[in-house]
Length: 489
Ligand code: NAI
Ligand code: MG
Image (tube, rainbow, N blue to C red; front, side, top):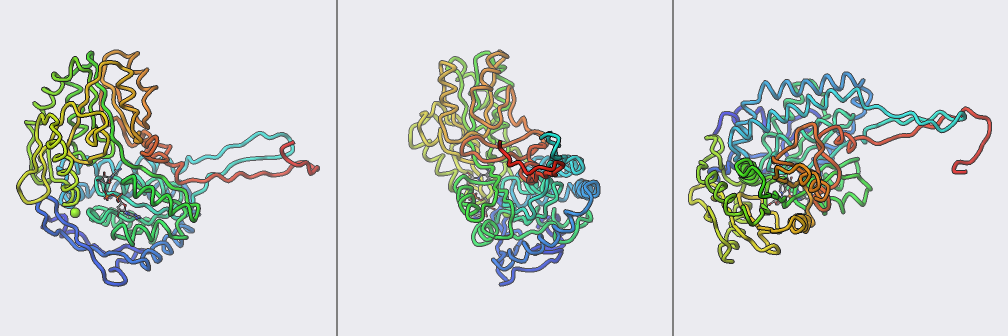
């Protein structure tokens, strides 16, 4: 077992500052995806445990809401300090549990610290407005927290996404209950411990590990949850939204993508190939904003592919802790899903330019794979694979590229590669996606809003805009006049 796992104080639930097993003693195993061997057992929280976590959060919320904003900011900033002090151990834990290459886990954890720093500075700047409605009324708005935020996170960036949701929720004055994905609970458990060490009040950050059902479902439908943040698949996001409708609970959903990278003949093809390879093969393609499909002008299709193949054939494969380029997929389930798409490509006579095989070693490894000239309407071109599988399509006219890019119900991110600035700017206007990159991929930082158009989601993560998900507006009207005029006249 990796040291980072044995150093965990406990893998129990964290409810109201207490560590405890599930009320019915149920557990679930989390494995090391590089070996498919169990790494640790964590509690599988029951509905009663979720009740307790929500009550603990409600209690902590009252005190936190009345804590001065500058003090809230200071405490949240201390979480960043704790994360930075434990960054190596956290990265090893993430890499062991999730499978990702160690240097990618390190970058995720630095990003997690950065979320706490970034939002800490906003704690005392959440200002309302004064609205000039005339001499007879003073009118202003106050931005208030919702109360208890329920956060359901996925397995692809567990530690980083914990921070992405928890930091703005806390800074806005909310308490949180977090349900990490069953495949990758360990970094969340550790990060919640570090929140306590940083001095956050007991019960402000609670963790209920468990499966989607009943644990996630119990959180989504809980009456005591005032706001829900979810990142994951489109079907589960829709299910959560339907559940939340019953109690009119606002949701922030960050869902999937099938993100186009559009490459024009005047692009710097070396740069495009580097970014596209990084865009699709980082975290073995298990990224909602992966560069899943390349739309490349027919005159440079083969040239771009040659460069991509050259990059991919240099990749090393191995366990995350060995810091290869390509680690394992997170689970057997994900492996089977990706293997099915690879099989689909091979059986449909699509041109397999590189890869196209699973890797026969313990753990869930598949080769980085590129399928060329796939049919525009084929499953490979339209469905989110969430694995190291790139599909290329060629186009001749710009309008055709835009139409292929916008064809799907997804609209998370897109990239344009060209040296013609006017063309790039036109495309940024025409593409239906929440984020558009020009001559790069992954152009997001902690400071920039991130989220989807269409079925890729609702609301924005990251940046100051994410705070909107955690604040509601109260308008205060104070009478200065002596009449009783009705409004709207
Ligand atoms: P999922 O969306 O079902 O799981 C994400 C989280 O939701 C996990 O914590 C899970 O326990 C929880 N969950 C599942 N069912 C729930 C329910 N009924 N109520 C409340 N919470 C529930 O995704 P899954 O099954 O792990 O992966 C399936 C596919 O989803 C992947 O192959 C990939 O295509 C996509 N995905 C997208 C992600 C993104 O970043 N947008 C992240 C993870 C998966
Ligand atoms: Mg695991």
